[in-house]
Length: 343
Ligand code: MRU
Image 1: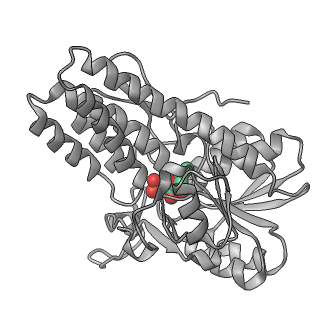
Image 2: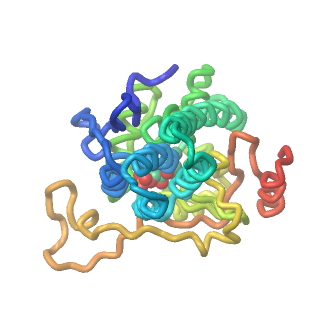
């Protein structure tokens, strides 16, 4: 069953983003007409989630080609766009793919049409990929499972349907009796604001928990499996994902609870040897010192606010992709995926 909302769409002139900064209390749309408006929307998290920022950036590259007077200006605008957020590899992946279309067609009169077509394709492929991953991932969800998830990985984090939340929805719509615990996901509350909203929209039985409740639920045998997304997977299977993922993986390993990451192949950085090399975004300290407009820490307190952490592959049961589930040994199996072999 598809959602009644879209995280992003293009109306012929502007990229229209459901403003994720103000959900769930306001459902408003943010219009972008220029590269710098798309860059701002990604950086300020109007649109967020690895696949969604990739799809948004593809339209940003289309705007760049419209704005640039020459190839150098075009490439500079692409670099500017690619620096909006460093961790999710989908951003550079989508920009590189669009730059390839530019290179192959830069002398043609229909260059802009071709770029727009490619952006539409990136968006449509993402939805199809998510649906394929959901079907594959559903196989690891037992009947009657209680699932814990972290951050937001649903239709809002993608061009549509979702990655980890897509698997959860697939399990629910295929009549499995599941129950979901959603971590609130400090400090930006993607779990409380966005995942809770999507779970309620889909009518999936669920409860919202403070992040720190997860350890007790896992120790007490209340969680059958953890399913979450990923922003960049290294060639050895290490996964960068929303801050808090690593901690969850350690607890799951200690108590023998299966731990799955769900990512499209576009989230795998085949050229990056290990998770230590993944650039981790640091965000403004006000995300920790304030909750909304309310100050919760003393004025002047220094803050360390990484937005992501890296889960070592040793803590991961499997990585679910549209081309199958990657199990250990991750390095070998990711290399097979790169060579185009079946898993
Ligand atoms: O900072 P965000 O909200 O962009 O972080 C999002 C996540 O960490 C998601 O888990 C990840 O992008 C996968 S979403 C399908």
